Length: 206
Image (cartoon, rainbow, N blue to C red):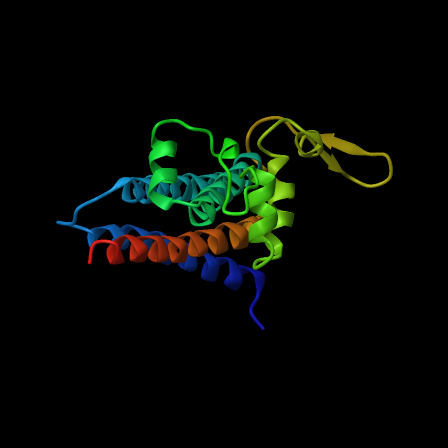
């Protein structure tokens, strides 16, 4: 049975590996003709790598408020790429996104608007945990009760300690185990999605 500290280090390695694999996917795309769906993929990949770097920095700084917001943003990457798979025309979808069209205004292959809630629920049919992570971490994007709770520490009875500043000075790495598990899993999922997406792009050039 692994300790929490061992699990934390294992997840960090998994996250680093998925991040590197995402970068490598695009090294293999050199000297190929690109369409709008490639630009969609590289935009997702670049954002994923940037968010991974930021997330690791927030863990190092013990900044849970930013770390959890970044989990939601990384999930957004996955959901938006799923939207491309759910669209009726992957290349047109990608072109529309590049031209600034709002994804929530577009319709999926079942004619439903591809809102974040719709995407989270549809993906949850295969990955049931997604809807819970979506709901929980969305509370860290817009101001909510989560931010109020994070400004307080319950010290027993009616005693609370007020917390001000960006850092969770009273928390260790293991406190961030669950957010890290979510972020690493989402990043691995994005890597698999990108493999599938680029595979479709590859076949379209044969």
